[in-house]
Length: 410
Image (cartoon, helix red, strand yellow):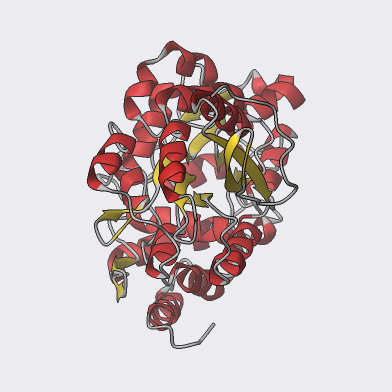
């Protein structure tokens, strides 16, 4: 049957119509249109059997999760597919809200995918989501002020303090929000540690964790800190760098086209390097972000939903997402494609290496509680004494342990 133009329901309907079965796809409101492009391409390829209808989620990641949790908790059948932050898989799968991928289909949608990304889409060694787009952070610096990019955080703070003034500052994400947890996790792993060794088991080995806390405390209390470090996020850091006040920032690749469009003089001096490490000899572990596509356990159209998800994460759609949205592919072989060189001129290989080395945040059904525990224990960052981090270490351990045990502390 030939595909036909249909008028779709305003919110989440799944009734079959002239365009075939409607597949409701709840995903973040992507401003680039890359996700809509993928939905349109797969709808066309289905030859009229289904139409993927995107239902935009709120911009804020926490609000996205809350909306999905509310709907899934009520057994909402309007959700067939959902675009999930890489930290949601364990929680949603443990709650019974995700349909498990069959082995053959799982193999197809994870072919050539980074191991770190597959881990983020799995729970108890089973795949519960198809990886679509990834993301990671790089070290961005001013080449007119920094002759050689630092390899460690201490080296970067030394360089920034030497530059001095507003130009001698480092942009990080340290507000009371998920971005702070992401930074803390990367620092601990870059020191050779980890937050959890299992879904309900706290690790937080004292030496590497203390080294990570010393970096936060040293930066927050030095001249290299932004005046607003306690409320800093990805966008405030981007704007400060574009304004010329920073010589360094850690951030996602979206800052590159932003500087090109909004601050061309700064853009000319902008270079990228690998995310710094904490302990010499330990490979740096940059943050890992991205979107994995899950099939709802409550969907009345699971067979078509799995088929649609498989199409959405195809190599063609991943390349398009990189081209139009700057969203890195999860298929590592695609970084050999010339389109990636154009999307990430001069740093496509750096993004690939960074995703390969990335530190997934703790994989646990209690992730939301764990993240809040970290933020609560370590905020504001200026309260961490770099010369005596033991009190903060003890507080962090206590809060995280309570979170994984779901003791209701938070």
